[in-house]
Length: 67
Image (tube, rainbow, N blue to C red):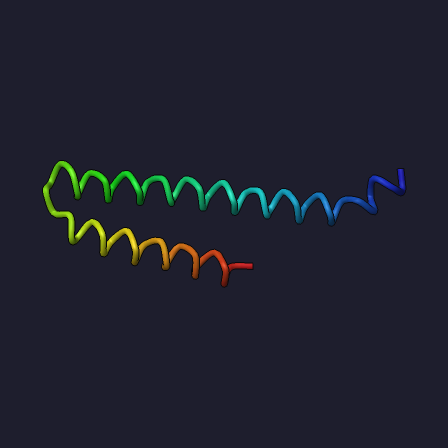
C-alpha cells in the first residue's frame, strides 16, 4: 500500500501533462480548421496564413509558459 501512495505524485504529473497535451491538440485543431475555412471558403488566404502562424506561436508560447 505504501508503494501506491509513493507513486501518486508521479501519476498526477503524468495525468496533468497528458491533459495539457490533449488540450493543446484540440486547440491547434480548431485553429487549423478556422484557418482553412478562412483561406478556402472566405477567400482570405493572407489573413488565414497570418492567423495560423501567429496562433501557432501563441499556443506554443502559452503551453511552454504554463506549468
